[in-house]
Structures are given as C-alpha cells and as structure tokens.
Length: 263
Length: 346
Image (cartoon, rainbow over all chains, first blue to last red; front, side, top):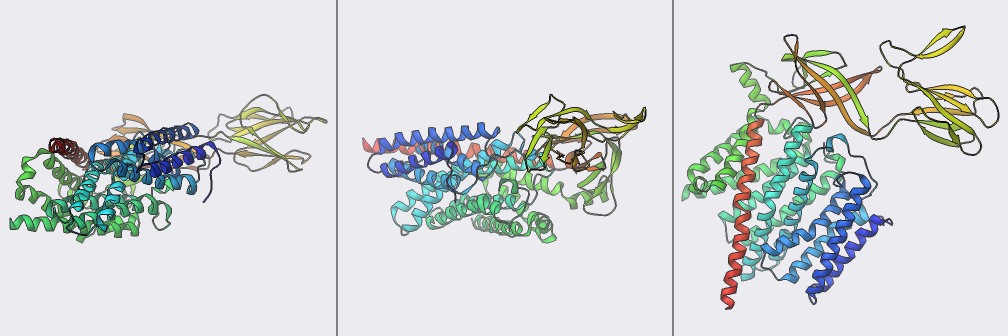
C-alpha cells in the first residue's frame, strides 16, 4: 500500500473525500450531498482526462487506470439508476458514494501508476468500448448485489423483500446487455488480434461464468418469480464472479493467460 | 405445462453445468481447457444445449411471438452453431466428406522474399496446404522509443545520446564533445591507399554501425565505431566505452504479404497486430517476429474463417434482442409505477 503524492494521486484522493462527504451528508442533507457528488464526478473526470494526457492513450490499460475509470463512471450510472429505481434518493446516494469509495481505493493506494506504452495488441478501436462496456456493467451489477445483500438480511415473506428484489433485478437487467456487449466486443477483438473469437483463456472463461450466472438469474426469475432469497443469492454470487474476473484472474499467478498485460 | 416445467429445470441445469465447467476450465489453462471443451462428452453437452435451445421455440410460444426473445435465443443458437462449424472436428468431418482443409489453424515462418503454400499445424506433424502461395514482401518493427548510444567513462560517469547523425554534443564536466558523424546500414571496410576505409555496402545483409568522433577538451580527436550487433566499443586510451542501446518498447509488428495464384500476385496487403489479411477463406495474422542472423523472420498465423459469420451474426442478434427486450421495458415500467404512485397520491 502506497500513497501517491503527485497531482494524479491528489485528484483521486479529492474524489474519494468527496464520496466520503456524500456518504456522511446523504441522510440529513441530500441536496448538499447531491452537489458534492456532482463536484466529485467533475474531479474524477479531471483525474481521468489528466491520466489520458499523461499516458497519451485511452487510460484503460492496467488495473490503476481501470479503477480510475470505474470511479469516473459512478455518477453517470447514478443518474441512470435514479431513472430506473423508485428507491429513497438518500439511500441511492449512499450506495453510490460507498461503491465509488471502494472502487477508488485500489487506484489510490494499491496499484502503481507508472505510465506504460500501449502494447500492439491493445492498439485497436475496440479497446475502449470493450473495457468501458464491462466496467459500466460491473457497476450496475455491484449495485444490484448491494440490494441483494440487503435482501438477504430481511426475513422471507416481508413485503420489502419484493421491492428490494425488484431494484436488484432492474439494475441487473440494465447491466446485462452491457455485460453481453463487453463479452462480444472482446470476442470480436480476439478474432482480429489473436485469430480466435474464443480462446478458452481464464479471463474469458470467468467472463463467461459471470454472464452465465446472470443468465441463470434472469431465467430463475421467470421460473420462480417469488423466490426472492434465491434471486438475492444469485445477485451476490454474480458480484463474487465479477471480483474474481476483474482482480483474481489478473493478479493471481494461478490463471496465466493472454489477458495478463492488464496486471 | 409439465413439458414447460421440465424445460425450465433443464435450461437452468444446463446453464449451471456450463458455469461449473467454465470455472473448471479456467483452472486448467487455455490449451487444456480447449481440449476439455472439445472432448466427446462436451461435444454431447453442446449438442444437448443446442437441442434444448431449438426445442424452446416449439415449447414456449413467447419465443416465437416476441421478436426480441426470438433474436436472443436464435442468436445463442447461431453462436453455438458457428463454434461447431469452425471447430477442428467439424473441419476433419467436412474434409473427409466434402474435401477442403482438415485443419483450422497453423503457422508459417517467412523471411522477406520467401514464399510458401504449406502451413505448420499444431494438431499434427504433416503440414497443411493452402490452394495458393503466400509471399513475404517485407517485414519491420515500429518502436515507441528510439535507438541510442550509451557512453561510459572510467570514473563512472555516463551519458546517453541519440543514435542518429547530428551536431557535436558537449559532454559535461569539461570532457569535450561527441558527434555521430555517419550512420551505416551495412558497414564494410575496404583498403584505400594502404588504409582501411569504411563504406556503405550494397551487398545483401545488414551490419548497422555508427561512426563517432570524440573530441576531448585536451588532446587529439578520435574516430571510432559502434556496431548494433557487436557489444561494447572502447577508445584507444580506454578512458571511454560506448554501446548501442536498442529500442525496446515495440509499437507494432508489420509484414507485407502477397498472395500468389497461378504465378500472379492476386492480392497484396500490409498486416499488423489487429489487422489481418483475408483471402480464400483464410485469415492471415501477424503472430510472431524474430531475427535470423540479420534478416527478419515473420511468423504468420493462418486461421480458417469457417463459421465466423454465424458467430458474429449471432452476437448481433443477441445484442439487438437484449436492447429491444430489456431497456425500453425497464424505463417504461418505472414511468408506469411513478404515474401509478402519482395517481395514488391524488
């Protein structure tokens, strides 16, 4: 764990402080929290653009850049979630600020941010859309899992369970096409770069696992519409698979593959 | 009703099995995972999955009525079908009955000017054959960084200068100047008036070298040479050593390929990473790059393009179906529930 003392690091810490302030203000002063949230987003945009200028290519190459991008996506997805969910606004603010804090922590304290040259395989127009689609989907799914976790704590049969399951579903339904898009764009890119649209690489297989878990979730809702506890569990399992896909596959030596340049 | 319940269960079980197999495959590594997912048991599984998907259209009328759902499930079928058509086993099956190649992927190593119509296969010892010849016209590497020359003095001081012809550069601490006065791509020596003189040779091959002129603050200037391929070079008084520093950060690998059919060039294209050439049902990829002596050796991967149309078509169908089915419904439902709440409030 290391503290970044340059401008890039300061920008990230400022955004994190903003999200922390949102978390503290959301319950009692939602209007102020909303304004701070917007300011944090603008700062995260500056952090992202600053990184872009520093490395000279779309900053989505390594873990540090991916987590900075995740921190940048929090506010736009918050806006979409507002339209999707009829949940109490301060609760939504708190969830989004907490997710923002969590995703920026690795960028601020864990991953190094030494600029790297973009290797030949990553110089392709699908690089940005592929990573962006996945990251947007991951945030939707993370928020769905937060509702899933909340739902798991509520005893079966309580009326809130149905509402929470519905929030979770709406977020998963919004994220699933993006998750699919990320998978397909990666596959098309694989065909251009490596000759295979599917290479059985560990990262690809874990991405498929994520997709299948959410496909099972969507089908199980049709088969057992009232089994909310199952829906909650699947939403949380989906997030666990996402964490494995995003972090474990790249950081562990257990899964060596063609996606290791993201480590 | 009973059939629907059975199908519901079967679909969930199959998706669950596939998820578990994918987790297992991730621990195996790509090569073994590919073998596992192509094993006879898994071929049976893929066939069952396709059969269940196809049967779904007969059992669930909603899959036929709603175009979005039809696209999603039809797209899944197309992707699976494309995967099967493009597989090694399907190629072997088709070659035995209909002719054509019985291989999906192979490699060829070519040096500039060389051509070949056979491909080294991963699956068997005998080479695969192409119905045309592939010739490598040219191959090169682009780098992010530039070549440089490192100067190291006996007292431990060191400087790096650009490996390109230029003006004299002042070396700090009153050490004089250094100048790259000439650059040779194919350095050779010949005798002129009893003296050995360097010159740029037109003969085949390369021997890149840099002529350096060192002018110390006191004393006589000295001319010496730094060669890209031949280690460290020292001044006659041994006070300074110089070394070529090759660029390392590769930006791109490039090869210009020509397709030759009946002795005639029918297609020529430059391929790079992410930019393959397509001809006659095959894709040609820039795969590896190396050097043999001084000549570049380009590794070209040749992949059969069979089935890819089904796969990408299937992707398009699934995405269109999902976008049509999920997003408009989500926002419409929210608007409906909001207006309901508004009415209740009134």
